[in-house]
Length: 149
Figure 1 (cartoon, rainbow, N blue to C red):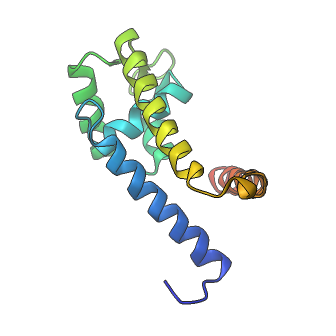
Figure 2 (figure 1 turned 90 degrees about the horizontal axis):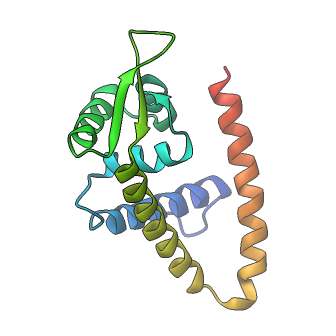
């Protein structure tokens, strides 16, 4: 990273380091792969999504999603059924076991994020929270604009 980063490179570097740190954290949760972890946490947010929509939402290759989903189905944590309206697509849902596993993963990731946050001096917490809320809104707006094109 350059000695004096611009806003774009700083956001990218923070994101890259955080994602790398989260991936290291998930590698020890139930032995799931990173893609499987993405699938589980996304299904926790939008259960009942089609496999195609999941691949688009995660911006991951359909083959990677398919392998991850098939493995999770084999583990009994995801159910895969034909879509009600479009029989060519499948709908994915967490099983009760899958919900427990996804919630356990979500808790581990949230705990990790809280530990990172706690390493920031307490007097900076409000400033960081305000900045994160602004960044969240900007990213959410940009994501909506990109996906609606």
